[in-house]
Amino acid sequence: MKCVIVKPLFIALLVFMSFHSFAGQKEIVFGVVPQQSASKLAKQWGPLLDAWSEVTGIKFRFATARDIPTFEERLAAGEYDMAYMNPYHFTVVNHVPGYTALAHAKDKRITGIIVAQKNWSGSIDYLSDQLLAFPAPRAFAASILTQSELHQKGLVITPKYVGSHDSVYMAVAKGLYPAGGGVMRTFNSIPDSLREQLKVIYKTKSYTPHAIAYLSSLDAETVKQLRNSVETLNQHPKAKAMFDMLSIKGFETAKDSDWDDIVGLGIKL
Image 1 (tube, rainbow, N blue to C red):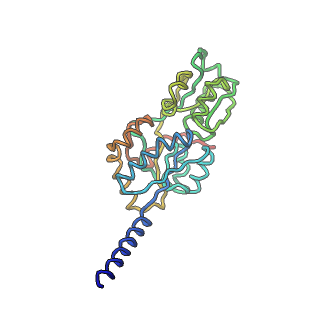
Image 2: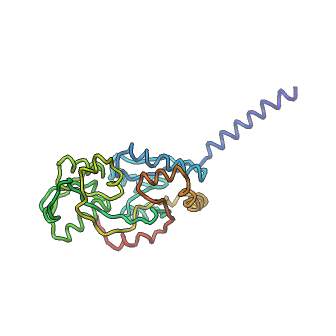
Image 3: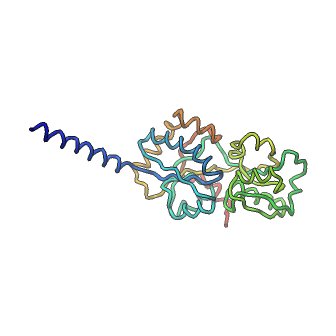
């Protein structure tokens, strides 16, 4: 009789403990700026976040948005516990709602590019008075840097915002616009069949790349665990495969002041 009573109680206790262990597992909503389609981002970042989860024991939930302006709204509202954001985004949300730098791509600088069709043979000056494609107004390198440097050269262009880097590349390849803005990382990650239709006709100066940052409400122990796991993540086979897909060499830990070069630009939008 004693065994009959104890066994169900023991099983119930295990179920109770298992349920509460699962329910109490940390889950971090990780937002990724939608430079490319949600499906492509999920293929790139899903396995990478799985690897990070294996390294830390922390559960990550991938999230993005339908376009960059929507991502910006969610970022400003603090809807992401952590996020991969462009350098300008970081300088904006660093103070409100309060995101702190954790990491950025290793040995990497971000450079804006302007692409045209493969048969382009003109000078950059030929872009003056043209309608050009860009991802979104606050896409840092692809829109802000490229337009700023064209303006510095005395070129007057009209921007057409098409939603994502991939949309820029496809629109230019189809001849809908004579040229458009992007970055080397996304340009290198598009299918060969599309990239072979395009050529880079201009590159901007280089700056500190995209930030991986966490919301100030994230507890200190989790932050410490994440920061200490970066180098281990770089060695994870699944992560290495995704770094190749993202055209980066891995992550390195970062501090807020790494983006002082962006702050120094005095961008006002």
